[in-house]
Image 1 (spheres, rainbow, N blue to C red):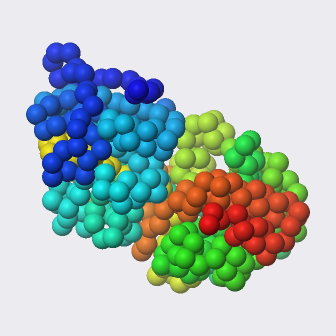
Image 2: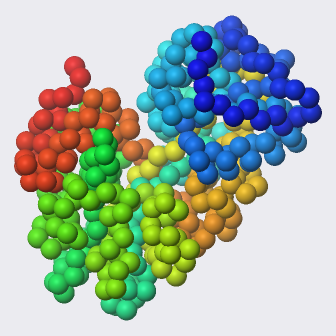
Image 3: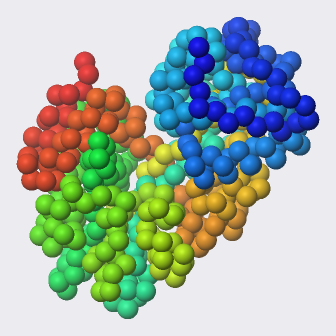
Length: 436
């Protein structure tokens, strides 16, 4: 049975055709998807809200120009549902994978189509270094980035920082450590930080660990750690937690003190940054906080005057690593021409130029995307951070087994930050939880 939370939009004249459960297509990856005779295709994804609305509008405009009817299927339980539908020979024509893990599994089972001859490989050279590789399995391209998000951003209160003479963003990690110490020496708290998120409490701490792993050891070691090719409690990871402690957990480093972090909600943790005087000067988080519902409404309404950003710096000024995420577009049949055309569009420099970039919820993975189309100067700056990166990696906890990435990693970081355990014990416990 097909279980969907779906909004169906017809982009051509006439009623939308009913999708049928397809047989395995010869020459394709298999698992389902419409045949090449139908101009009706289904695209399945996990994102919702303004991001979904912008995506639908962008695709509808393309579909109308290309005589294609698109059915949009949104689900909050993407990983489970995509597996169920593929196993039932009822895969969507196009899937936008929110995490590379499930895409990798399906490709490894021969259920996704090889995109090597579908997308222009030379054109894809415009992708952010590392972004394209997230859609590859053993060197073969099975998915291409449709969007990215950026998690290596430090936000700061623009006016207050300028008034305090904090006008030069740190160029290296050592500079960031010195800036932290310098602000703390004045009696002001350098950082805002909160990890409370109801049942998901702890996840903001995992992003900090992942950022510092990437900065200190590069993408190769980072990916080995994520894939458990090196132990979770490797001495390098212990060093990273001790480094995080120096930045965030020592006395006077975080607004409210170490004991407040686990009870401070991540959505409102940065609010003291906009007090007078500011309760902190820096807040590291993903690009989503610069949209309504996160920073205070009056800050969002005047964001370019109120908020500045700089990237989490590398070990040297030349190193510009970026931690992020995004959605990867894949298809289940090489015979489905309409699905191929949609994936080509989703990975092109044209996608996003019809208004999607302006709604503040989406970033292109392409370095040649016109950043002037983004909603405001803060979003343009975040785009520039992404497009100038020297290496881009996907959020590590999202790629780990669920019992680790959204289980022991969250719990043990919460215990460690709250002072209930030390760094080594926390990492030992996570390592012990990794499925055999």
